[in-house]
Length: 160
Image 1: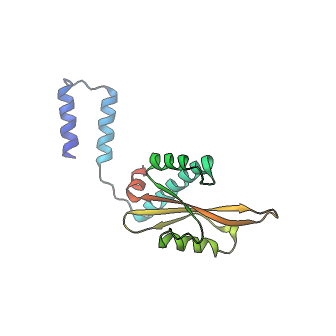
Image 2: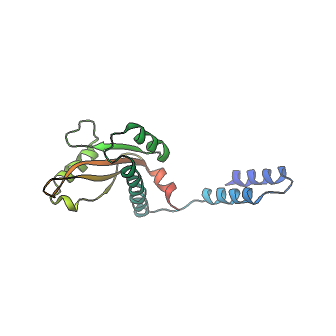
């Protein structure tokens, strides 16, 4: 906080006290962003759902099959997340991801499956969404899940 005030003062003196409206707005935003906020775990979980759902919607619009590596890479870079495909019998999955897949596969009614948030080790959150496969008879089956690994820091920053 001290540094923001110091930088603001230096900018004001450096500009002979004449800041543009844009510069004043940026300084106010920096001050607001540097304020400490108390955020509960429930708020973080809700924000992770919102962040994950918005990103899942973007992914489904661009590459629902998760096969185009360039699209996935660009989305990962733009949103600072890791997008993964969660399939049954995938040996590269983490333990928590395997449990989520087991829950989706053994979940009974495939139409009732919904997205999920799991806190993983460290500072990570895993958002998963089941991707269903439409059968010829009109029924739906679980085929795989979309997984988005995001940092808690990224989720907190998304909270306004």
